[in-house]
Image (tube, rainbow, N blue to C red; front, side):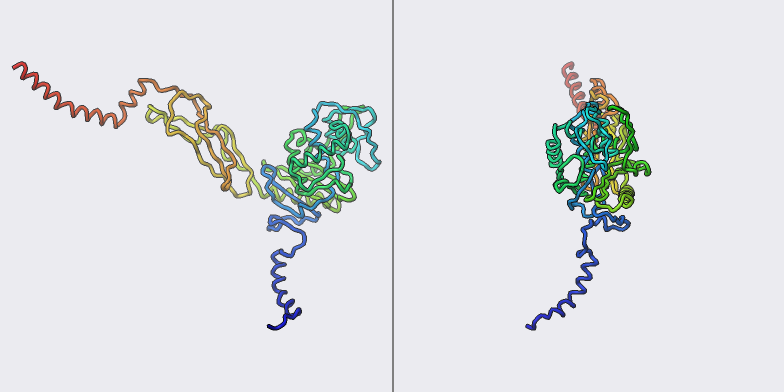
Length: 414
């Protein structure tokens, strides 16, 4: 067998390598199929992730599992842990935190007390580090104990590539996350009504404390773009410019995370492109509305009569544009007798997306029905063809019997 020459082998591999490069096998940063689709945004940030909020379905991703510094988006976990531990009306004394002049703060003074509501607004809108320290100590007594709670909460959320070292987001080798994990954290925080509404504020007035404070949202996209309603900005030397953003349009909400942008303008541009891309690809579909009649069930002993059954609740679903839901009525009896009260469940409307059940809506009676009485039962029995046929047969059979009886009586008289 002739020896394999390296030059000849390399020339033979060139066409194969070219094909592989075209297919993306030799591509550098891993980008999902979604990101490679026609019309997907060209994101300059080092990492990004975009999901539809109600299902968590991935729409776009770029280097989404690479661990990175996350700056003040750390405060999303600070807010979530504090919100779950404290009442909004509870009052906390300012922590003994001494921020550097360049740090974001609201200037809390020793002995000053603010409500948790105001501290959370200070934490999330102007990203106040002294508010973060106060919430941490108010929840757990010490910053270290609070950080342990942050990491425990991350574990419960399944954030496998996330670690917290402080409640603020200051650069630390042990304070990191990923675009995917931060997006999942944001989805969890959005489930809390107060936090979700706070994310969407352009500004707020902090009325508790030694003086009234007016604070603005550092996420300027909230005020400049109608659909944008959150969530949290961040910036440190190691993290670069960071933003977890959300937007809602016509019932569809998407959440995007951008990490490692090289400027605030680039960060905002990437975020807006992602949010618009996500909103354009999804729509809100109504499968059934509350009170909509979906079937008729015959009433026993009342030929021709039935009772309408209607959806007990409205069922909606966010779907990729152009896709539809399918429906199937399940569990309805062939007929019913009373007593039935209005609102009694008689069946189920099963709603599916593709092959997956996404909703089960009870089908309930639209009116009350009394139990059929003896008269109704007899009338129904006598009106049935089978009953009439039986009576006719009995009548036909009885004629000979009557004739025989008459003949017998005649013989007796004779």
